[in-house]
Length: 418
Image 1: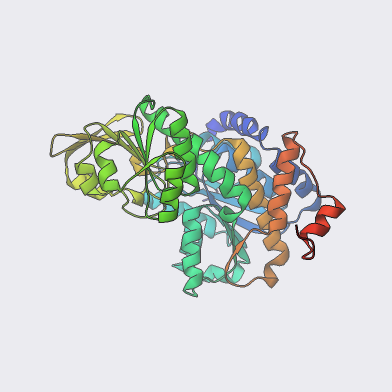
Image 2 (image 1 turned 135 degrees about the vertical axis):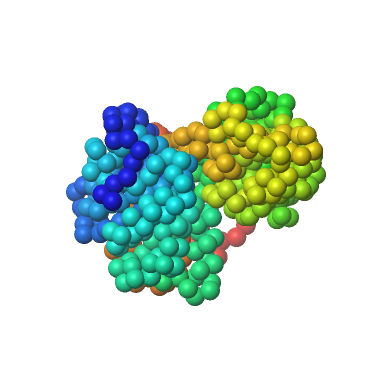
């Protein structure tokens, strides 16, 4: 396949939307300008498995400006923006293999289409490229100098591989950069998940009981935004420290078995499997809305939901009604996949600006330093993290203080006390 998109005639619309996002991505714009001059990725084949959105489009165009031969497929069957995919092919000359709503077979055909290009660097959102390479495509390892990973779920998978000594090349955990998870996961996920739920349902959140499963950075952002919309927010957790934090932040905390009885809207953001199971679906209110904003739809026990249902039907775009055998109805959004990308547009470009600046600079770091790196998971170097934050502040017209010579001396000394 040279490329595989839904409709190349959508390219004009996609180009306009990519341009709209680009104006809110000043840090990536500065990196692109430097990349065009320096070509730090010249001769590098880069295979990317990311959500095919307007923001991703600006990233892959930046990587190409840096000299890379870029190939892109989707990291989720429902997250592709078809007009963006078409524009990247037609207007940017980047081979894209992604169609919104593609079935599981096509999804993996697209992953293999990218891997068939024998990439030197892989760029993942969920570690599907890396998993495929370590599974049936081990022949590609000899070409690969390293990988970058965008999301929490992928980092968890990769750290497990490293701990079990099966990881075959170095990986940079972009998700663990402070300019990524502090902002993208919290402010991006918080806003875009609420956006996806409302676009799918047109429900008023004010006055509803909104259950957030998981209080990591994504859960914190989601709970904060749901509260801001006037919802009564309930948090479920398995970590006692995060549970206490949620209480101190003003939320009710309880087990999912209790929350299932009172919730009007549910959203999982844990990165784990079967967080909401059939015993929870069974005791939900009639008309409960259930969604997921974690990377994989395994957070919801959809098979369990099907087993206690007597029928189901699509009632709105991305809304499926399950009629339970006990007479109640549960509404599942976006087939349990990332609701913020399936029924909305994902994170705003201004927050993805920092996340994708990390991706671009991590790829450059790999290209320059791969010979020094071991087969393990690395955090983005602090120097890169702080430089992205500095550039973002400049783009926002915000200045901060710098240490005086006296202050620098104080912070590095032990003699000075009270």
